[in-house]
Image (cartoon, rainbow, N blue to C red; front, side, top):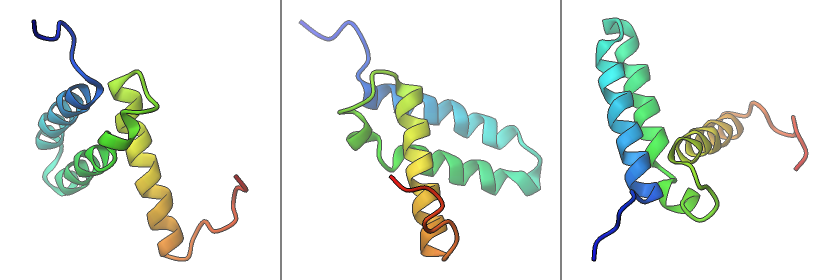
Amino acid sequence: MGRSFASIRQGVKSTADRWARSARALRKEDQPYGERLVALATMHASEAFYGCDDPLEAAVFSVLVELIKRQEQDGRGKNDVDP
């Protein structure tokens, strides 16, 4: 018997697919940013699967992790918030 509901990973992929369609609808100069957002949303989908019940939450979590990581790598944002 198969699943009657989508897994979080499948949900994140579905969300990313919708975001990709939205990115294509953006103005030409904004499309690369939308495409990057789609890529960021799926980078940690497997890890977010363990703690999130909602695919959108998992996608947003993934994006935020990457944004914070990139800020710190660029030398910005360090010690802004103590965990």
